[in-house]
Amino acid sequence: MPQHLSLATFHDTAVSACGIPVAQAYLNQAEIASEAVRMLMRKIDEPGCESYSVRVPYREIRDGATLAPPPPSK
Image (cartoon, rainbow, N blue to C red; front, side, top):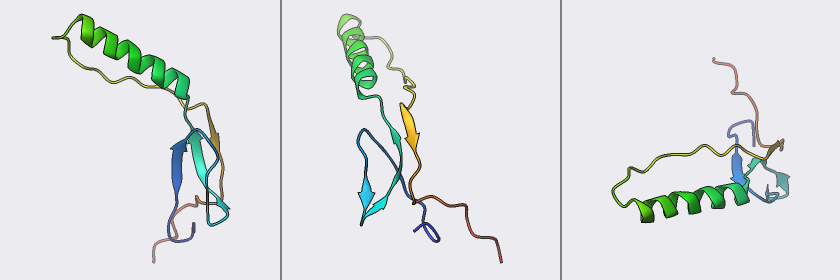
């Protein structure tokens, strides 16, 4: 890795695979949970309302040793 396969994850703690630090985007768990509760409360208050998607930005991105550009075409 990463010559043949790039690997990234979304998580809130550091991750490694076989001792190799994995590139990852740290999630903002508190903001995700707050938004989920807001959405649930709205659905309870207004059962017929449409569901919607919400974008919650990453907290930060950690470079790991698991990402690389694709190899040149032959």
